[in-house]
Image 1: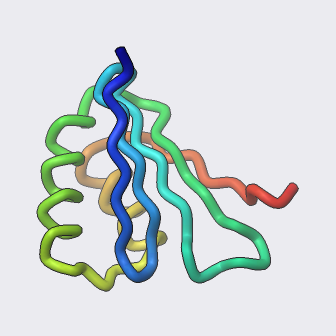
Image 2: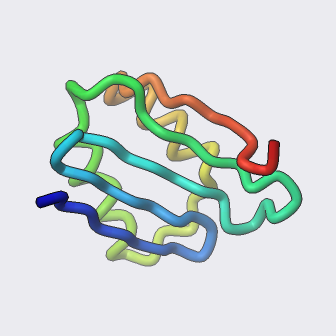
Length: 86
């Protein structure tokens, strides 16, 4: 059984999947491009998820690009960014 959870902030839609250790993000403000991102690396998933959930619970106002940078630099998740409209 797949263990997926979804969360929203004012700026970002998050989806976590514990089974395949994936984080998906979508920018809720960029409706023209529907900018989205997912992680390619799995090793830092658990710690990144904990930090993101803590921020979400505190009504975080960070942008998607700020969280992508954190996931890349701090947790080495190798986030892939793409335009979902294309």
